[in-house]
Length: 381
Image (cartoon, rainbow, N blue to C red):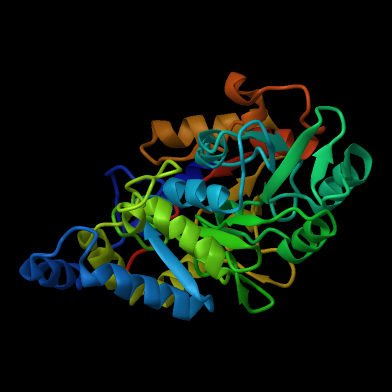
């Protein structure tokens, strides 16, 4: 199987001997014009008009009232958590099978992640595991705050993640969290272009976050965006992202940050934004190609969950066990084709290791049996 995979992938990307990487940034030819226009305006920092144009374009497409462009997706997560009122030594419910940035943002807000297991169909937070935890381990006090019984800490937020672009079951997660008065912040960093029953991911909770890092489906070089329909959340995030400029003549009572996206980055994002639909279609086309290829070997390629439309940002295959996954990853990398084992589950890291995590068998399964394969799209292919 491995030799056939190497042969087919080299032919697909038309690279007989050159290295093939997991994801390379796709360029479409209009980026230079947008960046030159920004340079000619001499407004290349956070005051450039491209920033607001980018925000309006994203908000309009995704159907939200407010979009705040930030210097990174992690910055947007941090702002979102603070705007939701997350305070020191509180819990944020999330899943451990993801890139470390999500939990780093939780720590940055002064809180701690409490990990709930994932759903093997979506790879996101499992509603059944969440319901079991909330029912057995929490209580809501007379003020409406949800507390974790064992630690007596408030549960300040829930932060579900759309892994590899596949939508988590947000309708079920949001419904559960509403019963316990827990606000939801969606990490849709990998999910731009994905939807559930026609509704864009990142728009189900109180707020959502996108990333435009260089490896994402479209890029601004570096950057992110906070999405919300709540004006209060937006205003809180905006003030903190701009170092409380609106309060400079008043007494400053809270810490703020320089988290705004520069216009040069927004210009690149606007150029790429014109090709979002093309990028999603190319990613979905690549999934179909991989599904046919691996179908011959009876190896599953992760597919979009029911009622969902996935951008297939990062393709993943499922092996029966870790040994087979490790062999595949080793041999393909030796042949100059970058693949990788899926993330190490975050509960294994000392930084996030504490005794209050739930049982996490599905996250450990994903860590052992999933591998990512080249997911670069070829523009105009």
